Image 1: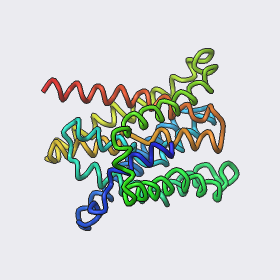
Image 2: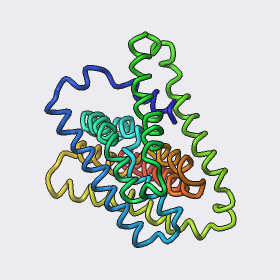
Image 3: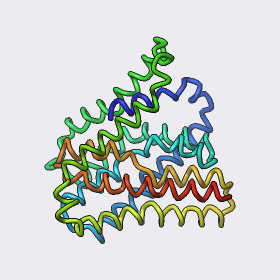
Length: 263
């Protein structure tokens, strides 16, 4: 995951932060949409639907993490507002330095998660990759690995999902019905929530590109990060919500792209 985060951060240049007003506005939009709108809805639905403690813990971790780094390229493919996608994602990760530990400790407690260990892991998976990406840019090494960024990211993400799925193979094969509530929450917080955002954005008169990027910031979480936190602090079963929601998220993006292509 640290490799994915490092590669994804390479596209963030120093010029990104020069327009303070635009950056702050888009950052707050990303934070509010991802952590508060999506997070509160996800936690509320989990309270109503999820009975398994491990799955509940997994959804709390999912609610606590920033948006998927794929929001930026997804916005490009779906003709979204790239400024909002980029600044909103960056702002959410900066805000996540405080919000992620706060949400995790509030809902899971220090009995489940060690605050110091959480900060250490977050530093390894967020702060460390950001610093490493700056070093690669400043030293000129970025040019040497630029052609391999896509394959490295894809294979790293595949490895994360493969490991989590493999560790939970007994649940998927022997207890498939136990996954139904998890899939239901995942569908409601992607397809249904995304549809609601589109309707609200159209009613309020926002530009289509802005609504698209906001929709992505709200509905796509960093599934790799939440899955990694689940494995570090709990057990493989706690990572099931991240795995299932990741699969639903892929289907959701395919559906969004098909709609764009039809137009």
